[in-house]
Image 1 (tube, rainbow, N blue to C red):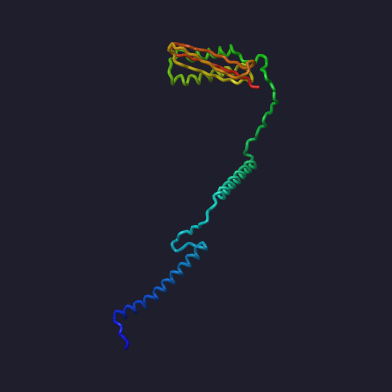
Image 2: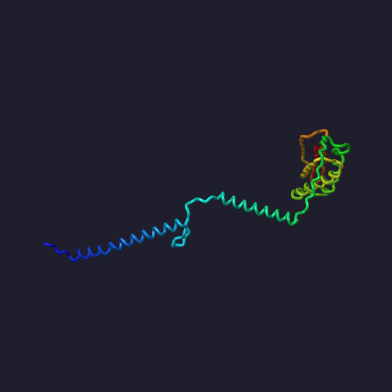
Length: 215
């Protein structure tokens, strides 16, 4: 004898039978949408959310740098070409080529003049430091001025092919004992130096002028 189903069992079975087709349709729609997204990404088309497709392939930075360098070189060549064609460049004067003298000794009368350089140092220091009180900031400027003035006057002497080095020292005078020394590697037959010391009640100044002959 057939058993009758309860109303609750009948309603549950009916609801399950109605939900199964709906779930199948949703799965199908989801698969179709996924296939469409994959096809768009492979073809380079943006998806529905308007986001650019990011490629996993690493870009080469060297290629971009090489392209920019080539572009700059082309622009530079084109600019040079336009300048040469328009004639806006100034005419270049040919360089004067002089023959080597191969002199290892100064000419007669053009040697380092120690006495005259000492007189120049004395004159410049007495004119500049007369009645000057020692001040560290002031003396910092004076040593540069004195060395430049001495160098300019010594260059007026007839001493061709000599490299000049002028050293000036200014210190405070407190009746202290001071010693200064220098050592150079040069040729005694051509190179020489001159020194002069100036004193007043406030400061002590020492200048040294070195002359090195250039072959």
